[in-house]
Image (cartoon, rainbow, N blue to C red; front, side, top):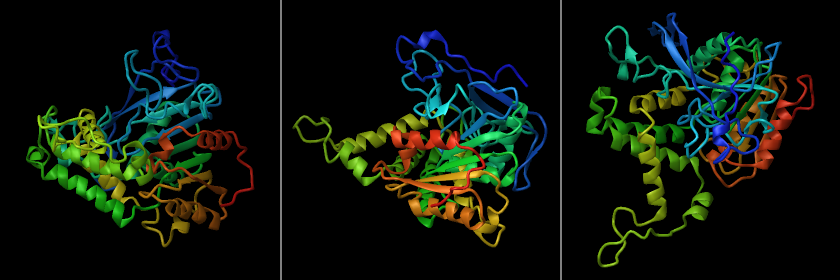
Length: 398
């Protein structure tokens, strides 16, 4: 047990951004596992680092921990601020904090950047001790099960005896359900949102277009590129493509419509490079992404997503979840066309068919796949109720 499990807000943020319910300034930590780690592929690395953040404090019985799992483009920074001048807080700051749906006055919240990532955790951009060069494309093939096992080691390091809950959206939802299969007795509650038991052909296709944009960029150089260089154009295009799938037609039309930018040539004709506001928005998304993400990590993580299949190795999805002991809540969003409601319902139905304590909620938003990230009082109420629910409840149904 270390003294880094509690993160106290500092007063420096209050003048600009700190509001009631914010955790304040937080400091990331590194968990260094200095023993060989074997991936599901059979490949082995001599050790790894996971960068993580914690909010709240672990209680005396060490059973009030909640593990939050991030999506493809997320990281360990899910709440609070790293410094007073930051423009944005962590990616789930609206849901994590004192008095919020995930109440840090009650719970010890942990969020880690996944293995294979590029925000401080060991991944393709990390140095391979055997070559003293970046792993690049030689980094082991990562699966969601590898993500789970590495984060279980982190929780043991922090002294967590069991998880009160594990939760996340999209890839984070996959991780949460997989965790309950890998370590059924360790997890009391699973809250998976906007997720799936396996990706559809369409979802895989979108990821492949993104990967090809990266690999066809000459600066990718077969994955061998300098830390401050690489396939920036290809990675930006991959992000633009993916971001479209996170939204909905309705939300994009409401936000941008067919409005044009003010960018014009000398004759007053709209410029060719960004005539519509939605184009400028996507370019901004691409440019901001390349400043914080590694291209080889993008390839690694999207491959992990595409190969994820809860039923792999089993005769059915029901057989795969038969060992689950957790109380489970699966949340789908009506306008999510990347992982649509029926894919979320499929998980809940499989659990119920096995006699598990499971329920399904579907929210009628028009914000698309990213609905789980956005402000929603209805979602907050569902999360708060589920986390506070008694684990011996029996009224579970679709």
